[in-house]
Image (tube, rainbow, N blue to C red; front, side, top):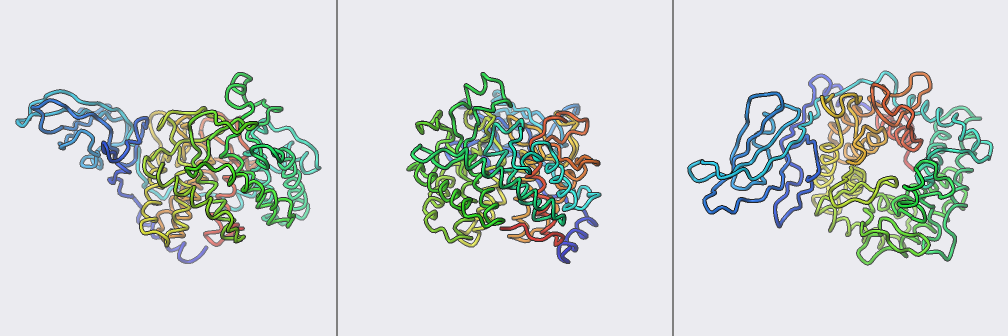
Length: 519
């Protein structure tokens, strides 16, 4: 372990780190800043809720009263507006279910009326470090990848044979991750046979992706389908016909393109590089004048099936990789237009929509997620020298991800059986998912490397420690759902396990215990 990492960890372990949690995250203000938390149910940082002003001519100010469930005590403060952040009392409030009542008052303090109420859960702030892990991160990750390698469908792929996988109906996501996972295993094993057969599996599945890609002359030539209509076993027929059949979700081919690039860099086979460039040129051709893309389309015609727009943060990271590592200047304008769209949309309105292939389209703010926000934070950190304020804006996005999606300590309500610390995925799947923790670990690592704040490293370690503890002690399997009582034990996604293994290997690299995973 590098000496400065070791020093930071020892210092934090000795003294403990309790981060101040009194600064609100992008508080709303009518006519100036959107209120993003209309459907949010839990907060680490003090929220500000949209409550309409009292039109009464006698009202002068507002009284905020907070009541914690099961307690007689009341906490109050006054403000000139009914949508003030709860900062004045936040540090005094205990964690748990809380009810807010806002009343309008006359100049003498008499109550005019109750103008609003809101119930929410005040979540524990970070008070780590949590852990430690009883197995080194790299060792745990390699064992998890070996579990994947030994699965029946992987054994078929290693022999160059088709292999059935329940979630193979989402090929961009699940087959793309299989390529990435086997390339990573081949790089990190000392067993020559494993290296050879992991490589063979990666090549076989990558060739499946190339065969599945939409042919030339079609609206989305070269892109890998989101949905495989011939293997729609993971969802019922009505769901599939209504939401998936004949459709392409434009967030998803980015995963397969990234994996094909990994395989090109590992094998030197130019077919995979050419496939990535073909995909990126299709994205460039189909980019909207606004700078983004429809979220989901009918792939035969290119017609959008809803007004929702793709948040292209993942695509921006891939384009950045091509521009930086391959001097692919032809994609600079596309990237910059996509960045401009994010700046004028989610960075302004904070609508970080959860865009998942198995979740229906949603009204604004109904289904927020950390994924695009963390990806864009990573972009801002990588470009921190280009624009003043990028670091602070990236910090805000990481705080948003933490506020809404990380559970640091055991709660008492909805997630009482969750293994903590953990990370939730999205409002529509507000459950502890290993890949969500992995995704935020990557964000924390990049923040630590960019600005040197050791707290980000410790937060990454705390999430990783839960994954090590959650792994099956015999097989090494990384189960998708982090429940201590085995809830959803059999519902496991390969891509989630692989993403998690990569995050732990990356963390081990940062600590100097594993060779670099960077391309």
